Structure formats: structure tokens, C-alpha cells
Image (tube, rainbow, N blue to C red; front, side, top):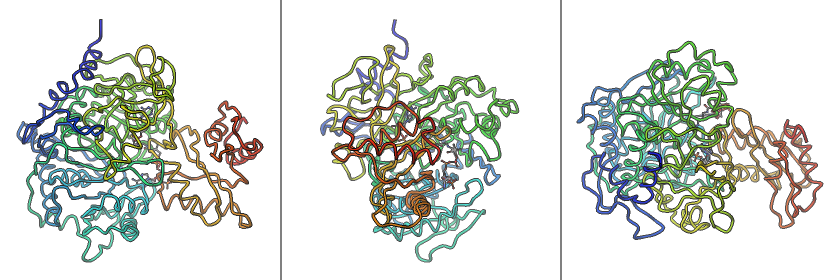
Length: 633
Ligand code: COA
Ligand code: AMP
């Protein structure tokens, strides 16, 4: 007999239009759709064509009309500033409507872009939702990125307005955002008309006359703005993510499919009932923050927690349990690296005993594979189901998940369970043909992707096709490799491109190589991701210097490290660069990054048959040993 989950899944694949049309009934539509799945321009699929709605209306105003006006919508908990604040749905809606008025007064209208570069403060959510209210397209840039990365995104999105803050607060240091913003605008070819700046008490900044507005003054002077209905297929946001080069990809999310899918996931994947408190300990700059700090919980009438702190050090490894107990969190979502950080500091979970976690039901982990050790530790200490689920910026929600709201399946450590409804995941070999159960291959998703994923890349339809669709016609290439076992459980093993995952943050080694290669003394370079106990992976760079360079290698390595920090940002966690004489290559000149990584991680490796000069690998091994890797080589 097939399980409840299998029945729901099968229906989503056999009758996607019926399945998602039913889910769409949960939203308020200004005009119903004409076509559920519009496939008239394959491989570009559109969901709910002809429909009109407003995402902000569905996330806020809808709940005021349905008895939630006085329910907390947002709980801001900030151990780094020692402050807490709760906003009801009514209060949040009013702030959002007023800030929509601020943006409208600056000429922002439907379709215009607004870049948001902010720390984890309520104004970040207010700015995002205000854009949605106007039908403007937001693009949030993570605060850990440097000015150059912000400039690249400003040039691609061409925002009319940038919303930012005077500073962010990291444990032990204040990150001044304003100089980074000024530098980015100076570097960018496109200049925004205005910037709106939140002045934080911790550190205020000088405003640029004629360009910058003070958030508070602008709010005081503004008139609230109504929701502007937009086409279901109109863009809601652009979120840039690492591609295989330094040029990030602008993942586009539409309004209709996104709202339908995300609202559906809250109950069906996370098992969260409207009114319950849901906490995604991530950052609004990442996709997890977009989907599960902001849109999904609000669309579903939950209370969302906005946490400005870290799992450890703000002030200690008990802060997650404090937040869960104090705000009565039912469901939490974070990255495994956060749990590894807690486990390192409090291996016995002593801190957990200090808090009442009786209302806590389920922990979800994503952003990187949950290693079985971390899974087991969390299960044992918290005594709740711990669910690994696999997803990507591109998909906006889980590709695979144990959908506890439909039916909780047995957990298999190391697997994010089965494909989620709507996600027809398959494993194909190099010839593009499906492989046998248990065999490793490329993980692909049969088109069309379900609602809430991405219809294209911003202003880059060709790149969208070329990067994701061309290699396996009829499928979306996830760029992850893995296998599906005989029970239908998916195991995600590795990326097939140069993306690495550092503390749940997705980074391109190619992007780092571009920075290193620009150093005047560097002739050639390579960056690989090596295993790290806490962050999952860390980047390590290899530099080959130009002939005749006689400066100290330490100094050049230091400059290389500083260069990546300045150009990409501290979030890259690029701390190690070693000078080597040569890089190992195939006879056709391809750098053997995979072999270097295996040596660094003390994994078994084979001498590549096509290697140009095997001796170089000995030199690389020595270089790795000198910085603490390849210990057993
Ligand atoms: N603004 C400015 N700088 C930032 C930043 C932000 N929003 N976020 C991180 N940084 C900086 C940090 O200060 C640090 O700088 P440093 O090199 O001067 O120390 C650097 O970027 C790396 O930060 P981070 O990856 O957070 O490492 P950490 O050592 O400070 O903390 C963890 C390690 C595991 C505690 C932390 O990575 C964490 O909480 N991870 C959760 C992962 C997560 O939320 N993932 C999102 C996907 S679900
Ligand atoms: P991002 O776009 O930042 O969400 O990163 C997506 C990538 O992170 C995926 O392609 C995977 O490589 C990795 N990833 C995310 N979640 C998981 C998971 N649960 N298991 C394995 N890999 C994951």
C-alpha cells in the first residue's frame, strides 16, 4: 500500500496543474489566472499566467482581514544590541505601507529595482515587503559581501534606490556599511538616484547631501501606500548567487508561483500551523532568509523570528535554546554548521537543560549536507525530529525534504529524504540517461520545475538555458551529484562545479581565483575547498608567482588574503594562500583541482592518467602540509 506521502507526491507529478491550482486557492487573487502552467514558450515555463495579485497584501493585509491584526508577525531578538521588539501584523503592515510611501515619493514604481544592503534588523523586512507592495523588484545583498560585490549587483540590477544602514554588528566588531555603500556606488557604472539609510544607535554615519535620506525622517514625512496588483509572472525579487565565474547569477522569483508554493510549504513540509512561531536562523541576504524569515511564514500567518546574533558567542552556546524557549518557537530552521559550532562549545548540551523546550517540535537543517554526527547529536540532545532538506537559491524551497506536515518518513542519516512534491528528481549519467538505483550521477529535475522556483536569470535568458538546461535537455541541472537508493531516498554528495560551501554560504572558487590572478606578482593560481570540521569547507589558494619576483612569499600571501577579503568580503573566509612553484595540470592544461582537494583532505586518490608531471603533486602535498592539511600524506 502506498503511503500518504507517496500519494501526494504522485499526484503532484501526474497532475501538476490540478495540484498547484488547489494550493493557489489559499491566496487572495486580484484576478484569477487564465492558465495554471503556461508552456507556450518552452523551456521557459510560467505559472498562473493571466493572474494578478500582490505578495505584500497576501503576507500582511490579508491577515488583518482574517483575525490576525493583533498577532505578532515579527519578533526581533538581537543579542548583539541587547534589544528585543515585537511587531503585530497590524504594526508591521502599517510600517510597510509607510515605507512603500517613502519609496513611491522617490519615484519607485512597479518594475523598478531597489537594492537592499542591510543587517538583520526589522527595517530590512519592511523594505523588502514595501517593494513587494509597490510591485517593485528588490535585490537584497548579504552584508558580509564587500563593496566590489555590491557594485557588481548594482550594475546588474540598476536600482533606482538603495536601502541600507549605518552599520552591522558582528561579535567583537562594528561593520560600517556606509563606507562600503559609498565605495560600491563609486565603483558601479550605474548610479542610484537615492539611498535611504537607517541610522543605528551603535554607530551613526554621515549622510551624503542630495543623495541620502534618513530612514526615520523619511518615514515621518511619508504617506502610506496601497498594494499594487501585479501579474503573477512579474518579478518579485532578484537574488544574486555564485556562478562559476566572478559574475553572479541573478535568480529571478515571480510573484504568483512563489506565493503559492511558499504558503503551501509551511504546513506541508514544515508542519507549521498558522499562528505558530517559526524561526529560520539565517540571514535575509540568503535564500533561506528570503523564503523562511520573510515570505513563507508571513504568507502562512505565522510569527517569524528575526535573530541578529550567532549560535555561539552572543553571548554563549545556549542562545538558540533561549530564543526557542522565550519566544515559544515550534519549528526551527538553520544550517548544520551552526549546530557544529554549538556542539564544539557545549559538547554535552549542558545549556539545553537551562531552558524549557517543551513546545519545540521539529528542527530543519539545510544549506549543506547534514553530516550524520551532527544529526545524531541534535536528535539526542533536543529529542525532536531533525530533518535535513536539500535546496538551492535557484529552487527557492526544498528539492528534497521529509515533509512532516504530510507524513513523517523514517530518517536516513546522510539523506535529505525523498523529492518534495512537484520536484521530479532523477539521476543521470554522462550520456544523459537515467542510471540504476544506487549509482552516482548528476542530480537533475525534470521540467517543468514547480511554482516558486525560478523562471529565468535577470536579463539573461540565454545564460539561464546554457547554465541549467542545455546539458540535459528536458531537465534542470542542479550541479549537485548523488544517488537515489532503492527506497527512493536521495543522497546529495558533491557539487559538480567549482562552488564550495563555507559555513552554509555558497561561494565560487572561480570568483576567488579571479581576485588572486589580478595580483601583480601572481602568474597563475588555483583555489580549492578543503574539509573543515566546523564550516564544512574552507577555501585554500595556491599562487604561482611571475618569474623574477623576489618579494617575501608571506607578504604576497597576506596581500592575496586581504585582496579576497576586500573584493569579495569577509564571508569568503579566505585565510590561506600558499606560494608554489607550479600547479598540477593535465596534458591539455586543465588544473587538477579535484586531486589537490583529495590530497588536502587525506582522501584516497588516483594519479590522473592525463597528468602532465606527477612530481608537481609532491610539491603540492608539501605546500598543503605547511599550512596544516594533508596530515597523513
Ligand atoms: N556583515 C558583515 N560581516 C559578516 C556578516 C555580515 N552580515 N556575516 C558574517 N560576516 C563576517 C564575519 O564577521 C566573519 O568575519 P571575520 O573574518 O572578521 O571573523 C566572516 O564574515 C565569516 O563569517 P561567518 O561565516 O559567520 O563565520 P564566523 O566564524 O563568524 O561564525 C558560524 C561561524 C558557524 C557561527 C556562522 O557561520 C553561522 O552562524 N553560520 C550559520 C550559517 C547560516 O546562517 N547559513 C545561511 C544558510 S541557512
Ligand atoms: P545555496 O544556493 O546557497 O542554497 O546553496 C545550494 C547548494 O548547497 C546546493 O547545490 C548543495 O550543494 C548545497 N546544499 C544545500 N542544502 C543541502 C543539503 N541538505 N544536503 C546537501 N547539500 C546541500
